[in-house]
Image (cartoon, rainbow, N blue to C red; front, side, top):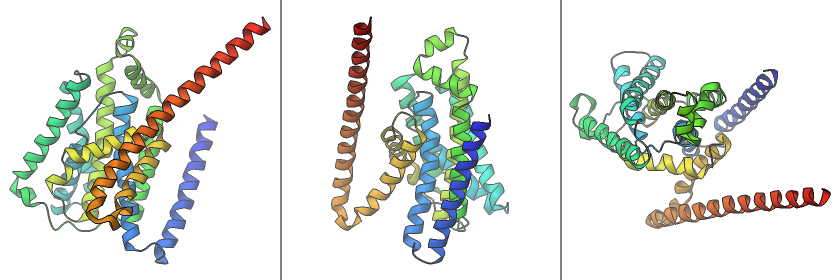
Length: 315
């Protein structure tokens, strides 16, 4: 317990120092408005990627419609703010609406597995997009305009830190270990008395809450949202962030998200060619990652083989 608390305090202290340094650079205009917007986008994408990571890597369920919860959070927060509700309450409202949606959708769909679940979540994403396009009170297909720019760097940074702390505690808890057991072998987990559907729905609900939080922050950052911003292409981006991040490690997920968020901007000088270079780089990264995994496994095999030979020789 003390060790866990010490690690938490060190992480929070390091986060506070990083925020102070970045805020000083922003105040001194060393980080200008353009780079500040990129930093804020990275923080929002990290929240999204970590929320999807809980479902994909820790529970072992492939979801292709995670951007739908981001859309629900974005539109919910913007709409309730327009009704005169304070900004903080609006963010919380959007997140809770997304969480409730995740719970209601998760109950029937998470009884499915594999490709069936992926297709179902993809269909849910498109349903949300079409619904938003046909609700005139939310701007319809033209988009929701007139949203004030309430999102600041402090809001997105500390929301990201909150997400990291909460999700790290979730995966380290008894419930988190139950989620991992579902990923490893759902049949065996069920045979051991674990309610697999319950823990999958729990992961889906928590994940949807933070996706909704990211959506709310995104809406008040962009000051305009359109249903097409949250289509399945956005969900594909989240899956790529998570997959390239590794086997669930938070550091890997954060690093891959930051790199892939910056990469399109870094390639902007290539104009339209960046739309070709970016996917090619993704393919190369994926190939290298698979090779590294295979190399690590091969090294592990030879290490075990060598230890086994030494034990036989000693005997």
